[in-house]
Image 1: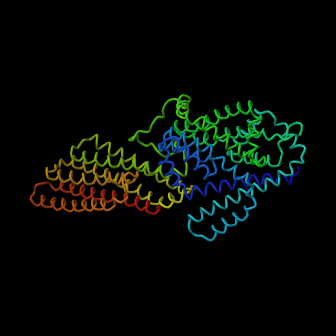
Image 2: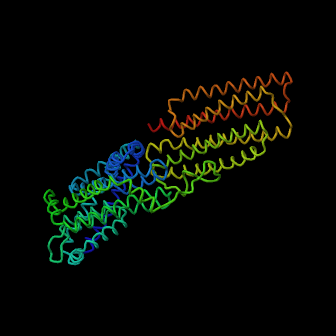
Length: 553
């Protein structure tokens, strides 16, 4: 085997990996948000979760990508461990689609598919069309890589060194270990199984006597299944304990399944091999069919015990994470270094942190208003402290949005990302108004000014209107309030504007009647203006979120 064949093999492998990456990224960008929605909605029980995992992985062409996404979903609280188990089981079947496609030898069509994808991407200006074109281009590059590798492998049959190495691969344990190590290195079982399939098609697997030994491929496949867990395990290291448990579900499934299949193959390899050969046209189809049947068998056996596997992960990884409290200062709960980053859930995590920030700003506004009436020094102090925390969240969320804007986000998420910068700014401005009201409370206390009962009643009524609008806007952020409520929210904002004009006029009337002091009157006027502006910012938040949703619809 010469340098030419080695370069051909390496180049083909590179093209294969590049094709898979282009395809996966193209699919994630084109349909990532929709796939995320499907994962959220249709994983309420094990069976539907398994079907969704199967279809999702078949589309993504990567069980590692699917499992990593599930781990990030669990880490974000979008999915429970019991839901994750079903999806992970289905992903293990879906990953066999790649080897089935490879076994059908579609390489002859690769140049046409690649050209179609490239030309479409160059001609079209629409992002969605370009992403779909990327999928076709990736598919073409993938099979071009397969063709290149096949050409390189065809020369291996005449290489004594290669024949000597592969003929020594007769020990099942060594075969499992080989599959495990290679898959852990390339981070994809699809790649390793496809390589095994191509080598089997070229008749490279022989025993010490030179007779065909394609059965050893079954043990290599078992090793590949365990090695495929490394991607999810690595991605879970930075996550919460439930994320680590989700990755462990994947590992336990494959370890237990591998042990079962290893025993079965050891006891009954000949009849199983004969049965597989009976409906497989060649050794390549033999490997692809074996891969699929192994996975289906493992899922059928282990799916009824998925709850027990989840409980086992809780035993292996005991305890709970130290949770970031709702009001914990200078800490991020849903984003940051301690949270698993995944482009498909990045915007969802950012929205949850924005919702937390908005709720803190709303609470701080009410605390400031209470301090204005009661002159409670502790409340005044806490308003200033919480404002520092809100400023911290604003800086952190803005930095996070800039970071994810440079990531390969799904098109739907990317199109609406700009609105979230405005949302963060409006929430921060609400926090500023709360701090201003706390400063008015200090002014009132220092001046010894008092409000009339009528003034207090008006401020309370106006605050209630603002609170209602704030709560509606917060619900829009997290998606629990329909975007169709925009007219209702607009009417609420108009009512606050009308209320501000009314109380300002009433305030002038009281000053004319000398029913309040000038100092108290100035504070009252400033508070009414601040509350009206909070209403404006609350309405802006809802408008930006709704515009974002409309832009990605």
